[in-house]
Length: 455
Image (cartoon, rainbow, N blue to C red; front, side, top):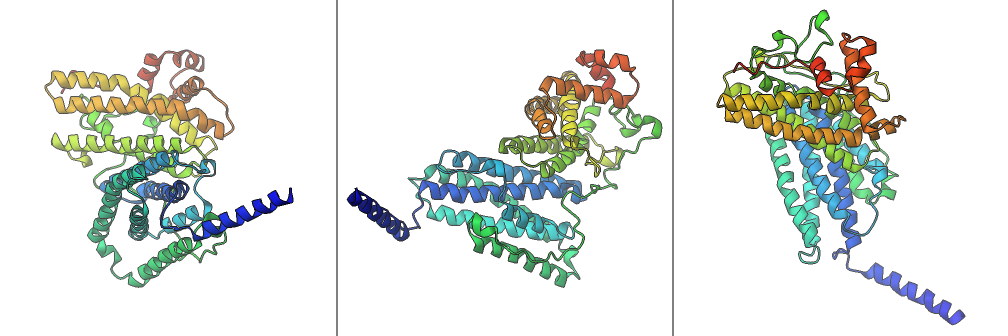
C-alpha cells in the first residue's frame, strides 16, 4: 500500500517537472482556448466602446462608421466564441467580461471628447492586432488550422477598423491643435492601463491591479445623457404639442415626400434613431447570454444600414437630408427597470411588424413605376425586419425576466400593442383589448399609410 502511494507521489512529481520544462511556444488546445477567450472579451469591450460612442459623435457619417465597427468587433467575437466552443476548457460566459478587462476598457472609453476617444480606441485596436499576430505565429498551421483560418478571416475586419480609425484621426487632426499636453497625458494614461493589464497576465493577478486616477473630470461619452446630432444637415423633428405622441410619420411637415410612395425612403433614413437607441441598450444591458449580444448587434447594424440606404436613395433622387426632419433616439436617465425591455418590445413587436404591409406595398408600387432599385431596397428591408421580429420573440421575454417579470412572447407582444394604443390616446379603454387581437386594425391605428398611387 505504501509502495503504491510513494509511486503515485513520484509520478506526480515527475509530471509537475515535465510541465515546468514543457516548451510553452507549442500551444495545447487548452492554451489556445485561453488565448482566444481573452481576445474575445477584448473584442466585446471594443464593440461596446464603439456602440457607446455612436450618440457621442455629431456627424451622421461618423455614427455610421462606429456602428459598422461595433458590428465588426461583434462578428470577430462570434467567430472566436464558436472556435472556443470546439476546444477544451471553460469560458465562464455567465460571468461576462473579466472585471479588470472591462474596467480598463471602460476607463479608456471615458474620454473628454470624440477625438480623445478615437486616440484610445485606436491604441487598443492596434495592441490587440499585435496580440492576434503573435498568436498566429505560435499556432501550428496544421494542428490548429481551424483557429488559424478564423484568425486570418478576423484580420480582414481588424485591419479595416484600424485603417478607418487612423484615417479618422488624420482628417480631424485640427481638433488636437493646442491640446498637445492634454492629449499627451491622455495617451500616457491609456498606455499605462494597457501595461497594467498585460503585466498582470491571468485573471487572478488582474484582480490585484491598482488603477491610477482618471485624468478626465467630465467624460463626454460613452452613452451621453443626450445624443449629439448634426442639426444643420439632419434637422430634428419637434412636433407641436397637439401632434406629440400621434401616429408614426403622420405629419406632412416631416417630409416633402409625405404624399408619395417615395416616403418609404425617408422612413428608412430616420432609422438612425432606432440604431442609436439600440446602441444605448447594447452598452447598458448586462449579464445576458453572448448569443443575445450577437443578435442585438446584428439588429443594430441593420438599423444603421437601413438609414444609410434611405439617405443614399433620397440623394440619388435629388433630395437633400436638410429638407427632412429626423428623430433623436436615446434613453431615459430616470428609466424604470423594464425600460430596455419595453423599448425592445415596442420596436420588434410593434414598429417593425407593422411596417411589413407598407414595405410590401411600396415594393409592388416601385416595380410598377419601373424603379427596380427602390423596389429591391424594400425587399431587402423586409428580410431584415422579419429577422428582427424573431430576435424580439426570442430575447424580449429574457429581458423582462431579467427585470423580474415572467412573460411569454405572445403576451409581451400584446402588452407592447396595449402600451402603444395608450400612448396614442385616441382609443377608448374598452376597445384596446379587442384591437390588440387584430393586427391589421392595430397597425392601421399605430402608423400612417402611404400614398402608393403617386410616385
